[in-house]
Length: 305
Image (tube, rainbow, N blue to C red):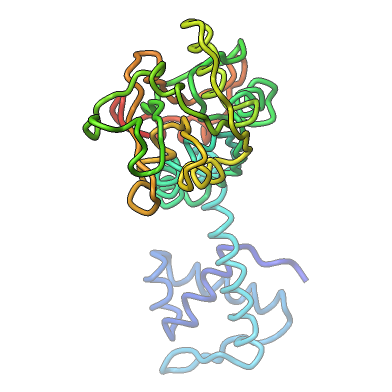
């Protein structure tokens, strides 16, 4: 038995659904004689009659009904395969490893990724959340194809694209004396804030290295009361009054209404930090990676994280 080709299967399916050879040929925009020959060749190939021909048209035999089900399934697979190959050719299919800091994931990155998946369902994003240094290093060493990180002390060999503004805030329990007389939205100076005990993040958080450098510049030290590894722990300890905390805007503004905390941005220019999208200079990355980077960076510069 010679395997039927897809054109022959399409002819058989069209005729079966149309109820006649001439009608099926019209659906395919083919000559009736050409379709009739393909059907005869198919029946000869399988050694069975698949269509009973009559004055009123054609009717499937029992064998024909079996072939119809299988042919429809094969044609659907072929259609899906062609769609997949087209998507690969245009870059709309693939897998991308994305490394990102928690400040990005808890902010607008989650919304951006949801929109991306709706637009490009064939591109799968594998997200790994980590500290700034770890996320940037993952991109630098090729573990991840793209990253969303704080633009601060990045490894060499990376290309960066502006993503969002994410300034540092100081937070405290509602009614904390640090905020007395300071209207919402008005900045608080760093040297005022570190008069109080601080709940800090463990090593690796970019905010902590930024604060340490700022304290050194003004020849002050930060009074670390507790060190934690998660921002939700930091917010909770602040909420119960064990100290103040420093956290990026993306990690606090959405929690203000739900928690017994309040916050203000730091007044110093160095506290207005930026998130950026990064990839390796030496990596071509492929079309799918370019699509993702374009999607993430298409918003206006300086938008909130």
